[in-house]
Amino acid sequence: MLLKSGISAIAGQATAIELGGSATTGITVGGTNTDGIKVSGTQTDGIELSGTFTNAINISGDVAKAIRMGSYSSRLDTAGATVEVCTIGAETDEDDFLIGYGSYIRTSGEDGKGFGASFLVEATNTTGTPTLQGLQSMAFLGSVGGSEAAILKTRGGDSTAGMFAAWLKIGCNTNCQLASGSLAGCLWLDSQLHGSGNLLGTTYMMFISTDNITTAVMGFAGTGGHTNFLAFDSDAVAKSPVASATITGGTQDKYLKVDLNGTAYGIALYAI
Image 1 (spheres, helix red, strand yellow):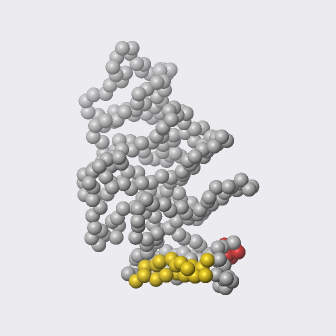
Image 2: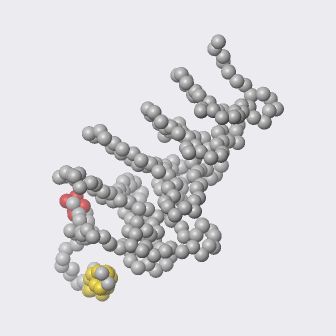
Image 3: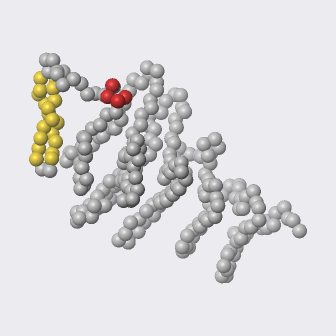
């Protein structure tokens, strides 16, 4: 017999459905359904999982989207001034990596494109917005706002050790190829500001700020080398900040300090 609603909650009960004892599968949803499990109404927690799990939620099979929380055209209707769409709070005292979020993507198609994580943050308020950040990543010694005397230990020969807000790495196996005409880089900075004369603010391709003295703006290490310090393609050369070698009336009065393996050098700067 087909039921419109198989099980209904009983008014006044603390738990609408309770499963006890031991079973291979607590709830099995089979067949073809529009919604395998649907939770609606006003809930403190739509689904709460507590206890000890190998995997709290295990998704396998052929899925278009493993988990969907709204979309670009159908967004979540959030309430409140500060909303965390997805919050992960984790803690461990084990002497190993703690990965808060892991995304492992493999593409094998001839023209396959893989994106480990994709973020789009838009501001559509025509009255203005002071802050817009596509990604915020922080590494903090001691809890944020706390006073713990945490210590960043010596690297001790571990090339992966250190304190970084982001570790960006590219690599390939020894039998792989970078074909002629291909492009690879650990970081791609792309500015596409089009304002028709309304771009009155200060813009940078990279903005670096600090409230303390640092050893250097950039540090270079590793067993590999660099053919050039900077490289400009034909389009960039036409609009690059590189000027002629002859500076009429210029006076060398400053220099940029460069440290090459403990020896200080100066790159001459001319007032123009």
